[in-house]
Image (cartoon, rainbow over the protein chains, first blue to last red):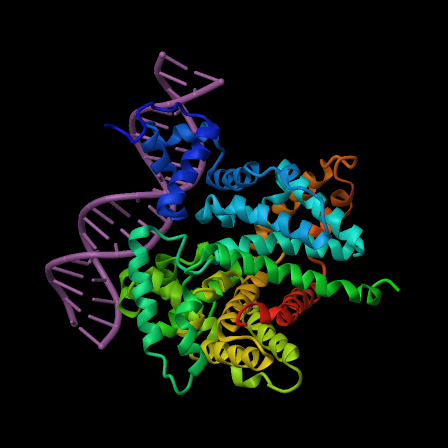
Length: 228
Length: 228
DNA sequence: ACCTGAACACCGTTCAAGT
DNA sequence: ACCTGAACACCGTTCAAGT
């Protein structure tokens, strides 16, 4: 066995991005390296520069790929608008969760992919239809993207770091929590473990999206304060 | 002139963290380097390892420093609870905005600083008093921290990158927007500039915090669905 | 069109040694 | 207690050259 895959995939832009995401999934984003990728392809580091102009462009391409796996049209646009909004955000979250360590890269790349643009347009459309003016709809649509990225990247429990390191970090956290003076931080001491870890991933995301959509619903009645 | 400061500050843990934050402010987090710091102090790179055990610990210390500039007790706890919550989140946002490029480092460090703990405890307290059970209060308190970090780190307009690069990135964005087919993305094409830039920073933060607090208010009535 | 070799200017970090 | 020298194993990237 020379590499993990029996068939040696030939070098190409897509193949490089795929491999980069695979490395990020297992060992975190810092492990994604031009030289490392070259080694995995059995090639000289400079060979990569033919398919990718530099590392920043590679990272951008990784971000774009996250949205490519997302089909905005697959999200049904039926039912009340809060439910539609919820489904849109959930779709983004789902796409980012496929590569949590690379999710950070998605935040600045939404408007550069076709499906991301579809998604943004759909969000704006349903928000305007719901009664928001275009400026506010834009703010909310942006926020919905930011929220999706936040939920995945900030998910409690050290997702972005390598599996081997996770144990040590969690131990350090528990030690810090154990040192909390209960008389000074009664509520925090009681819930500190829940604060920094996450036993139910799906519940975490459900709650996060609920909270966001509830906020948007709460903003609607006040629309009169902006334009007459 | 050897360095910018006339008085050569002597090496110490705090001085190193200060300088690291100053570098991050001007040139971004990537410019913060053990060797660069050593050079600015007129010292050998290994000298730093006496005051800081490694780079990760330095980054953590930078994150802690963000919360040190925050006094939780200074936030008045009067008025209705949504207003109190709003002030707490605004305080965190304010602290992070002092060093936007380093704000990412704060997300995992809240429970390691005294003022961060105070803040979390205060948030839990007011949420429980508002009628949430402890589990939900914990989820919301965590979310409020995540939101504060998100607002600062994801602020539209390329804050984390160096000033010289900003121009080029903005130009690239405008080009991408100009290429948007108006017939396919009518709403997006109309608001794409507002989507990726930010002409009114304070308005952006006000809206973001409003949206979050509105969401929390929206979650309250449903508390009956959890425990009886 | 696609890849290599050699080189450059960087990183973080260890370890033994100095004062 | 605090810092240095030398060394190691890494980075991204350029540029001329090969096929």
